[in-house]
Length: 408
Image 1 (cartoon, helix red, strand yellow):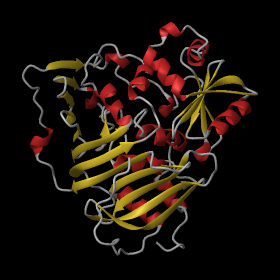
Image 2 (cartoon, rainbow, N blue to C red; image 1 turned 45 degrees about the horizontal axis):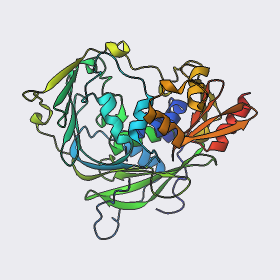
Image 3 (spheres, rainbow, N blue to C red; image 1 turned 90 degrees about the horizontal axis):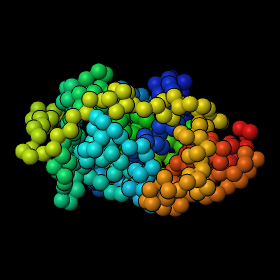
Image 4 (cartoon, helix red, strand yellow; image 1 turned 30 degrees about the horizontal axis):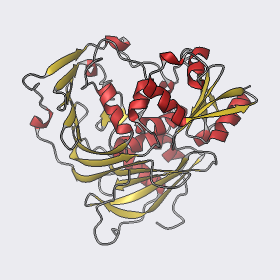
């Protein structure tokens, strides 16, 4: 691309990606990580000889092309790798609340199973036929895990344990899958397109958006859109999105950290077909002898629990703006939880694996705010103060401490 191409979007382009930007700022790193989550490492594009020779396009035009994309049907293989710097997914999972009722207790429940995408390399097979039918399969060496959304039904099957999960919570507004091809239960993005849409919601005047040449991905010609923070202090260095030159579908998503090194998140199609998948792709019958768990949605009252993504948590405030925004909220359990995190509370209540996980990430800090513990990954950092406040964002440790000091 020529250096004169749009350095950032015009007012019209910003309108296309506007709305809930502050919430989206939290969603970008957390949603695509699958931890809110998350998924993904370096996957080389399937390149032909040389980059494709395509007509020049501005950043505004490319964003409009993504927004106008109406490809509802596709099937393909996605290679993903996530390197958040987490020592153990098991340790992370042990910190979360235990589900009771509904899908709790089933190894096939997507709420817990898809946490595995928060780290390491994975191969996904995806298929979509409009908003009512999607299938996602996570392929392992000796097993397969699949989630199938077909109309009002959501099925999940874990071949390793021969367990089946079934829910009809997707019937009203398709909350289970987010009503979107490429989003798994809980609205976790699992394709480059879903990840790109989250990233584009974060575009505002604090963002630089450019087109950086062309490339081949999965045998298709693509433009490369680059999104970068203009501000210092963000842990995000750049987001690169390969966009199909013909239909505007994002084919590859790479999130590079500000500190350098390999990508935190890298997801890309290695094979893709935009034809209509066979109807049988979305059929599912529980295998003979499989344990089937019915989830009636009562575990959360039929609704997703409140949290920072919807800015519904008690006491949530935003400090700063743009890519260096920090979210402040009250820790569940307040000072009691903070005591456990700092190691000053009754640690007999904390599982050993969770203690190990917290100790591996924790870093004691002090400031005008008092004292607390910073938990670090390569993308998301969080400060929990000893008085039960939490400061979280895709920002550096110093930025968290400064935000906590400013809040006092």
